[in-house]
Image 1 (cartoon, protein in one colour):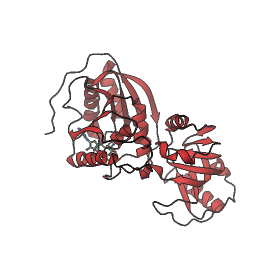
Image 2: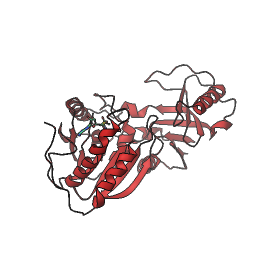
Image 3: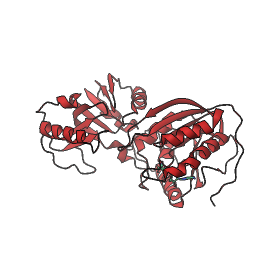
Image 4: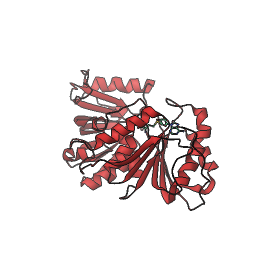
Length: 342
Ligand SMILES: C[S@@+](CC[C@H](N)C(=O)[O-])C[C@H]1O[C@@H](n2cnc3c(N)ncnc32)[C@H](O)[C@@H]1O
């Protein structure tokens, strides 16, 4: 039995990609899917995959057997109990069961993966592939704010990628979401960010896409230089005509590690109204944010502009942001406003 490991909350995206690759999914837990097939040949084609392991043991973390195959090199991840006393207890149990590990080099393959998910289930397995999300060759311009590519792939998938899309990320940062959308197939990409450093990073990210090697997850299709328009811009007042784009995906500041929560009270409703203006009727909006309060307030303030399709909590490096998917209704678009950023 093999375990395909993703970010908890993204299992449905992983299953979709497995189906496309002909891998049967036999069980799903929070953060991984199980298969009897050998998935090694498909790891480069599954963009929501973080690691692949041959399962040695799985079950409730508190029932970890006291002996398991020894871990020459162990990678432990407490998916949501990071830092807490419970996490420490589980870490000790894993170390007791697997042995004291040697450290794993950033690009090295750990001998054993030990993961505890949000339900307190543990997965222990021999690592067959690891750190897949970090291996994207377009990651040439990383910034502290850069999104996890696994998450960015799910956002691009949730936007219902279709040929001929005009895909906008109005908070594009270093361009991770744009890059993942480009890997899903031909489209026109539009990226805006208030920060010139981010715009430069996003431009370099997209320029590097056409140099992607076959090792790159998701790059099975030949990637040509994307048709991209990346500029400094204000998500609250975009330099785009009404109804000009077919899909919008955004990862605005959460106001936690990046930005200030109090600024989101103004930023979120204005960005959502602006997205409604530039999106065509029945176009789709995908938002990833940890600031649920301001997201809810912004959606209320937008009245009938958006229809909720789904809202899910995902695990992302110790935070549990919401991945929201919304459809643009046919309600009349809000009026255009003048940009405030030069
Ligand atoms: C969380 S980061 C996005 C990270 C991005 N997904 C990536 O992978 O690099 C949020 C971005 O929003 C930008 N930003 C903040 N306020 C903005 C505004 N009013 N208009 C456009 N961009 C803005 C910031 O400069 C920052 O790059």
